[in-house]
Amino acid sequence: MIGQIIDRERGAFLGELYKMVGICVMDTGYIGAAVWCNFTDKVFGRSTVPDCWLLGGMRAFRAVKVGFERYRFANLFGH
Image (tube, rainbow, N blue to C red):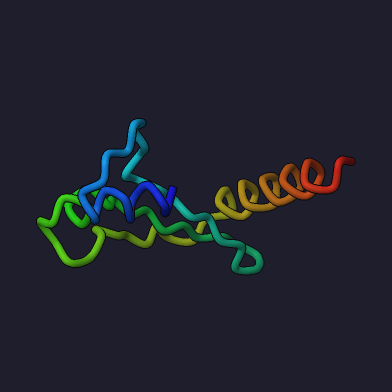
C-alpha cells in the first residue's frame, strides 16, 4: 500500500484502487487503543499531514489486537 501512495504522490498511474483510510489497533496492557487515519487529503495535496484520531482505550481494542496477532503468527509460521 505504501508503494501505491508514493506512486500517487509522484503522479504515476496506479492501475488499481486502494483504501485511503486505515486503522491501527494497539495493545496497551489491560485495555487497547486505536488510531484511525484518513490519507485522502494528504494524497491529493490538500493537506501536508493525514487526518488522524486516537480512539480511546477500550478492552475491545485489546481483544481485536490479540486476535489479529494470533491469526497473523499462525499464518506466518504455518501453524
